[in-house]
Image 1 (cartoon, rainbow, N blue to C red):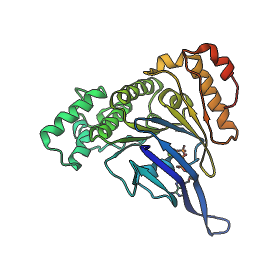
Image 2: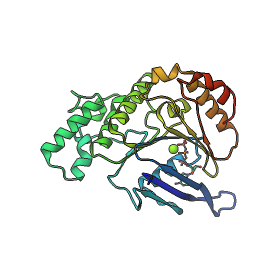
Image 3: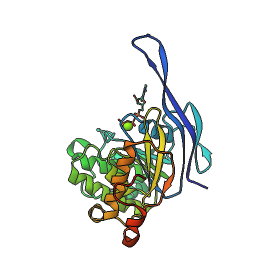
Image 4: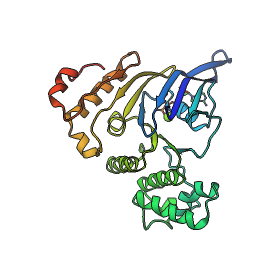
Length: 285
Ligand SMILES: Nc1ncnc2c1ncn2[C@@H]1O[C@H](COP(=O)(O)OP(=O)(O)OP(=O)(O)O)[C@@H](O)[C@H]1O
Ligand SMILES: [Mg+2]
């Protein structure tokens, strides 16, 4: 059984047409079906406005789809719950809480006793490399550090699933690479199921087991690309791999043109002899 099952999600918004002054239906998501395995890392890429956040909000339970089902572990999703951690682009920390108390938030909601709470928080603060910053407030941290607090906060209450909407978009390139490596390390260690939205094809390929490519208006799945690059991965190692360049190039081309949804076998890095036969540079996948 899959961890997350999305069945024909459809979402519409109602917008006012300034010309006719009538309210019109705008289809943001259509026929969106996807199965995600337990412990799988799935990235979503697509043009701005194609419905990525709309989709993730539905998985988070923040909004209900117009039609279609979403199930986690076979259970219908009817609203937000602590089985899902949601990490947004704007850090979304509580500015009046210290790092420690931000990370503790979900555990407080779960009524975890204080001593146990502190131990768990320390463990996750250490995991994201912020030991020594427990008593700082968010405004005393850099953007990258705030994002790490957001990650620690989401991990601390042990959600089964992590939902990340462009979490590293607002940080500089160097910090972004550090955060990508940290996320890969944390994922290797915790084996959470992760859905990660990004505008960066490179980031999507570096992190994911599969990259879902979306089309706009309405948002549909255009193609799902399997990323068979070896693990464990680091940004520096992956960047040097020729397979990585080809895969990112092909997804780039894919975003430029219309194709039906299907799975693509991407050659593994240590099987270089077959690479040219299976997928040549510039080939559309
Ligand atoms: N509350 C809303 N009311 C009306 N239209 C909306 C609403 N929220 C989103 N939309 C529209 O739905 C479409 C999808 O929006 P969404 O935010 O999901 O896109 P996105 O893929 O996340 O874009 P980006 O990459 O820019 O974050 C867009 O055309 C947007 O204008
Ligand atoms: Mg968005």
